[in-house]
Figure 1: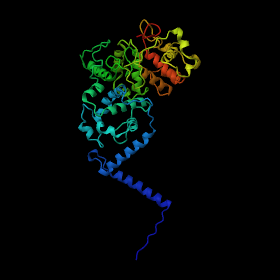
Figure 2: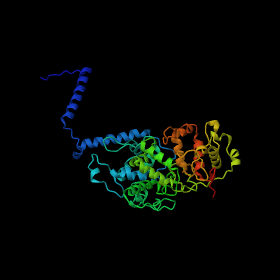
Figure 3: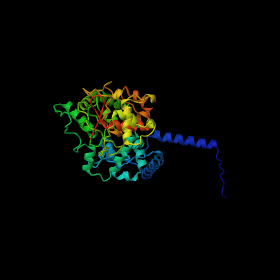
Figure 4: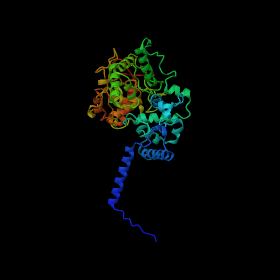
Length: 430
């Protein structure tokens, strides 16, 4: 005869079972018998489960990622921007086309994968999410700041280009071994005699900068891929490096190297780049991530024609032509729009023609000749309240919030098409 066991599930019993489970978990942890050693690896079912959970999390949570409309992950300039950071921040664990993974990182659990093999498995959104947020319990860190999606997309662009990349191509992109690194500078950079340890340390730090900016501070390549450091005031460069180092200015690319060096080294680097003669020609005019080697020819708009060239509605609407855009940019730079609480850019960033020193403050940067995409990015960061920097960064925060999208485009276009000159900036003519 079979006996029937009656069991009634009540909230009291559910609570008791949950409490027993918690006690059992703590007891197991207290016993010290949990297999946490990396040397033992994961049991196959458990390892599979963790990887399955990670894949599902990346797939679902990346659905919220917003992909910029003008994003081109095959853009050589965008790829180049992510190369230096990969060499210093990623290759140490994941290896590279010129570097095998070390036995140390292969002894991690889980071991970091070779990205050439793994990248094709992920969508663009998933790669972005993984790079920006990292993965817990794997050693994969988050991006150093959550405020720079533009940098994360540049890193994704490099990762997309990594499979099939030859060692020579990687060496040129990421290690500054190509002919455009500025290592043999003809623009005023001084060769340093390696006479002692301090000079050798400086050369190593300078080579670290040259990976992206070139030894001469003009940026690697002729295409405006990186902002121009050459000829910027030393005080501004040092204050910016200190802001990166202290975390007051957000950048996943710049915070790690700035934190790597002490105050004395940062000052030497600032003096080095300040001592290089600044640009005399127009910067490239492509948008964010564009390969701007083929810059749009500058348009000359006489000052007396400015008001006629800028439609009355241009302060709040897009100019019809490139001529109108540049004219609006000139108006913003030289006169401002006081009725919209926009002072003239030149009132702070203008240059003394004799010495090409900032007219107002040595901690204000020169804007003329900077790449158009870079100026737009910085103005957007200020407008969104995400841009820190020197002790005067708050000045731009209060100004940028009044800028429209068209005004940002116009100011960036104007300064990208000008070069430092006597008095007011002079347009570069063909």
